[in-house]
Image (tube, rainbow, N blue to C red):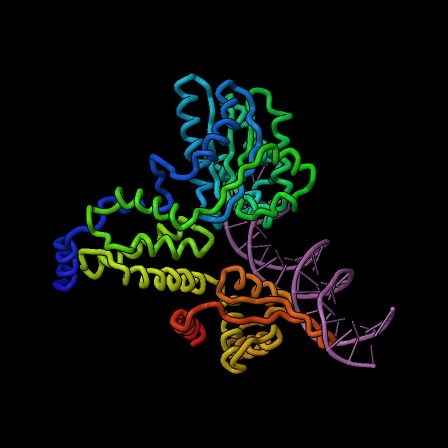
Length: 399
DNA sequence: AGTCCACAGGAAGGGCAGGCGA
DNA sequence: TCGCCTGCCCTTCCTGTGGACT
């Protein structure tokens, strides 16, 4: 108990670093969004007809992650809602993120989530889909609303649930008498729209906005803006912002990453009771973010997927280089045998490997060896330190 | 030019669990 | 409880394919 008290007391005695930590998180919406005036104005013009009760065009917003798409869409949406309220018009903005596991990544969950946002309750599962459409329909129609759906990471939804749902949503307007529904789709997959069914493509892509990546100088400006809110004066040492920006700019100008880096750097500085944030904390923060992310992924994988990863690591250890799918299967099946785990078919393992690739834990690419067939060549995509951690986690699972 | 390897990966469907209303 | 619906994980079956070999 005494030790814990010491920790708490020391924390309280430390010179504070943060003034408002929130300002560095993704959920924070700043007053002013730098370098996005054009996009804000464009989206504003597209949505403005809603103020006169008209249906607005469907919009697609493209841009890589951390380019401000979500921020701008939510910001414009909120402003629009406010102005409409003042003018006595019913405009409702509904935001859903399809990448949020277990919340909006299937047709059922998306609809259930939307219906909930209109204040009605829906069971997690169990209702036929057409009934859900009816519920959603009633929810919208009941309020005489002009509804604008912001569907974030819409590519994730379509990949999992197919594009039928988008078709159904765009078609709803034909049956609605009093209300209107428009869609703002947000995606970081530039080729996304071309993968859609042409019917959906034409009705959904009435307008499109492209969000270019930020450059290092722009990210610096964003960080400076936010740090004025987030930190007490003079805690950032020279070069910290520059370093965070440079690292994030290397990764296609991802402002979110820059903010994360800055926040974690400061948290590490706070934890070490060093009243200032110096460059060394940025390096540590980069490692920590990488480690935390990967460890989290590995920990939350189902057992079979962990077994496959273990097979990959074992196979790489043994061959000391790149390995092929068959090497993984061999190690994986050995592991299953040893732990009474029923081995999955090669087809399924191949999907699990692809999943691990998607998570960024491994890198794999399909390679043709001519007469000797085609295989997937696999290598690990983590630093040695992270690998040690992964091994630790997995050996606890497969003692 | 044609063959053929060794897999990738798409399609379809089975089986299970969770949840509903009757 | 039963029948029905869904999502999810998985298998089975199948077609496609890049390039070394003949």
